[in-house]
Length: 429
Image 1 (cartoon, rainbow, N blue to C red):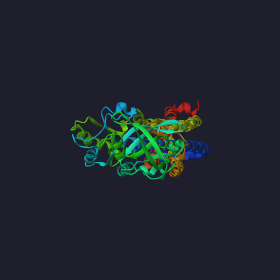
Image 2 (cartoon, rainbow, N blue to C red):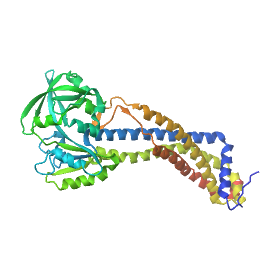
Image 3 (cartoon, helix red, strand yellow):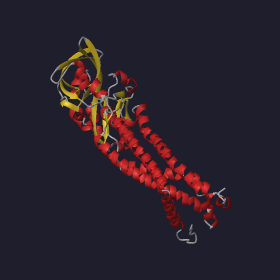
Image 4 (cartoon, rainbow, N blue to C red):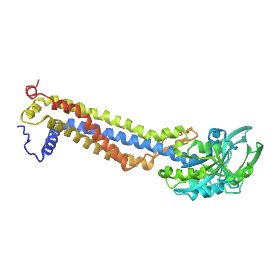
């Protein structure tokens, strides 16, 4: 016999919730199918979001370390001609007579700045097997570069060049292409800042094996002071890289840097990492855009729940009519079916979050081998091994999405049940 208690003003919702639990146990197979569908959807969302977020974070972090820093200081004319690696728009001191080293010291005194370092980028040619290969050469201050970007993490063999040396560190792919190994010498041919052609011989002291084609196949690092002397650019560089105390402090660190540079007549500008290129801006926006895709995945899974609820409403027409005849208001009938959807969503989301969370945690420890994906752009890097992101907000997002989407998808069949005419429903018309 159906019993509906509506006279207890203190807890009608509690009684409806208990009735919803009882109703779910009446068709355990369909309830289990609905819960499993939601769980699978949540698992797919967890893995997809963790992998995509991990890939985006890896691209951004690699670009920050190897190209832009958190903030990059350039001559205002340099950015438009950067692809040519022009030496005609250098960065030196903030005041006349000062050097780039003075600017670095001034920057490191600003709030939220952890460290700064100068780089000198230029193009060069190297001969091998009667052919010429072009590459980018980066002059770095070895101790400062290591402090700012921990460049040594990419070393497979050897060491980084040291100040005052005619030494170089090249990527494994580039060394293989040139037929060189540690201890060998190579001769670089390049154009100086005065427009003259010059050649210099370097000893190979380090080999990069990062898995990034940009680094392993196209770059050579030499000491900054050596590059400045060879290019006739003493006291100058093509850029200064600033690392904030953390990536989230980049915006706050940018304002005092811009204030410092505005007092200079050198025409320097500060560019945060998120404004370095259109690619980077798209990447920063893509995390939020992908959230819509994840919600769509859960909606597809929640269709199982919605279809099941439609079947249940059709099968329980007579019962719904009896509840209405006994005094259960349309709003209470609506809540009853919403509770059923909520319970399924909560159970499926909890199961999916638990199972998916374990899978994501394992993947975050060991990574996913992507193979040789190379480089899509000079400032857009993808590592051969991606480490999915695992953190609390990710789990909360998946769990909450499963509950909310499932409950919403239950609304239409629940509203249909609430609007039934009691007499027609009892006659099962």
